[in-house]
Length: 113
Length: 113
DNA sequence: AACATGGTTCGATGAGGATCGAACTATTGT
DNA sequence: ACAATAGTTCGATCCTCATCGAACCATGTT
Figure (tube, rainbow over the protein chains, first blue to last red):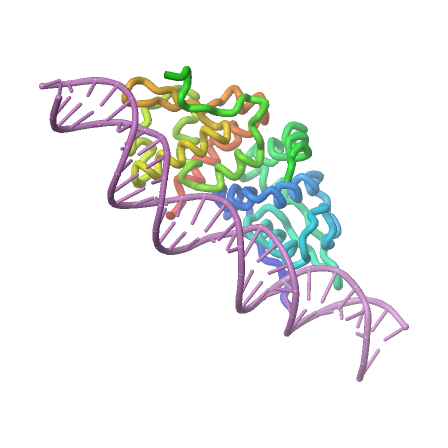
């Protein structure tokens, strides 16, 4: 087995276009906000209360990882996921802070969708 | 003639989802960065060096205006456009600053597309 | 070994949207 | 009045992508 089955771009290779494209889907913004603390979270189908099938959830998390937003760590049968807060702040200072600020969270909460 | 032919949402009605969806297109991010100074800029087909037809340009600018990113002012046959820096910063503090920061501009410049 | 479980991958489907050219509107200039 | 110019709107086309279900894979459990 390889060292890490879940490849992600190095900090310097994170592209703004990829990040913004990734966040054009509201589901992924929700996930981002749920992971705002930068800690590892258990990844389940019903994590982040998205009401989607597990294949869709897998797709979203893969998209986020490949854009450089998250890191995925496999622990046996499960896996944990984490927002790359420090890397992202180094690459695009202030961006994640703004996207996970109170205003952003409130706005997302008021969404009818 | 009406007061303003170019409606835009009021500050409080700017939605994060709309802003992020709007910026999922790299062309619009380029426009955003070109307007970072918050001043009015003359809007032409070849403003912002995008290499698109005028109908496409019109589409992008309409999308940005409707998302609350820009304000359009008509002056006779031409029109001028401006980034709503203050409104956006009031609504989502730090977001525009991060998106128009040096890191963001450099990243966009390195884009091969 | 057999089974259950957590996730990924694949193929199909459907919706959204970027792009263009052409037609249209309105303003300026002659 | 006529022509030129700046932008918008419309319809068509094409491509991307979110979503799902089914098949698959790997790990854990009995």
